Length: 138
Image (cartoon, rainbow, N blue to C red):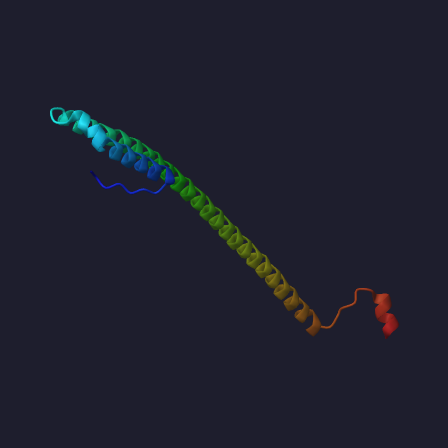
C-alpha cells in the first residue's frame, strides 16, 4: 500500500469509507463464508475493494493537482500582467520627466539668451528714431 497524502475532506472521507469497507470485509462473519477453501477469493475481493477506493482517491487528487496548476498559472499570468503595467507606468513617468527636463532646459536657454540681449541693450544708450522727440528733449 503506497502512502497517500490527503489534503481535502473528500479524500479523507473516501479513505474512511475504504477502511470501513475493508474492516467489514475482514469481519469474522464474512471470512467464515470463505473459510477454509476460498480464502484466495476473499483476499482477491479485499484487494479489489482497496484498489477501487484508492483509484477514486487518486482520481480526486489528480483533479485537485490539475486545478492547483491551472490556478497557479492564472495567478502567475495576473502577476506578470501587473508587472507589465508597473513597467509601463515607470516608463511613462521616465518619459514625462525627460520631457519636462527638456522643456525646462529650452525655457532656461531662451531665458539666458533673452537676458544676454537685455544686458547688451542696457549697457548701450538707447538710440531714438524720432528726431522730433530727440529735439524736444534738447
